[in-house]
Image (cartoon, rainbow, N blue to C red):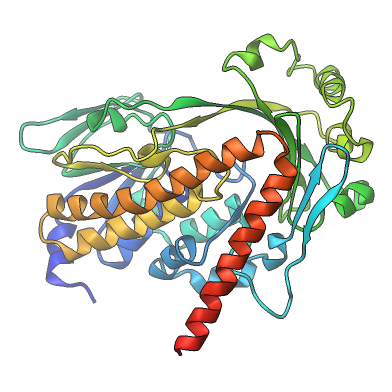
Length: 401
């Protein structure tokens, strides 16, 4: 049922910049409450399948957003609970952790490929709200609190509320804060090992059904089995910002690049080096950026941020997509509950600051641990401590029932 507030909000023009999981979730939850938003995406078509690997969707954030979007049952039908498996090695191949999901006790963070998740969202979303091929060049504040949006293709739009769901280098963020994404000290090279079970059964066995971390020397080999049967590999390095430019690795010559990378991991366990040997011929170098932990801004009329645009952090807390989806649900419901856009935005922002800053602190601490000394042993200790806290909370909940 559409309430009076939603009817009033439905008369406002709302634009979402970015058609990633956060932007799509926001548009869908608004749609379910009778509020139509326009989603502007710079790419000419949906590219979510190419822009990321497998995602663990958390019970208290991403899954809650999927419930608000009406997609929880569809998600459960395709979620991979075995993807919660986790193996941890050091550079010598010593195994520190080998967690295997219990098939009789579903976990709280099942996996789904980014493309599959976005397909669920897109299938439920009115296609008329999507505008592909619209790269935002400028958002101009107007005197009445609205914004004029100007796009590279010449299109313009005037909206009552513009929401930046446009990631690390958001074009909407400067309307609210001077803060910029800064280099985290970590660079990655992304590889793919296709059809791993059939083509490389030895690596499939080493990796397991979920994630594999091998850590040492302030660097790591991270492997992640995806739903399409490939392993996404992230070679990760603590390095200066310009290292990717100066390291001399010819990323446009795959065989030579892989040889150079094998040299860099020359004293690592040979089975771990197979993540490089078996990789396909596309290498994607990238830097990891983050916003200041605890970033806040003074609320402004007609504009706000969700996801990485609001609280970009390293991927080492597993919170990125989950926070984006939680932001989407919190903002959508806040807009529905308030008669005025500004009131809804301010209520959302205050709540978002609290939970996102906590996750950002965890992410920053995990980054330092993973790329610090004795990383495998320290990560094992941290995860065992975390598991113990979870068990204590479960026991407390059971005893209070």
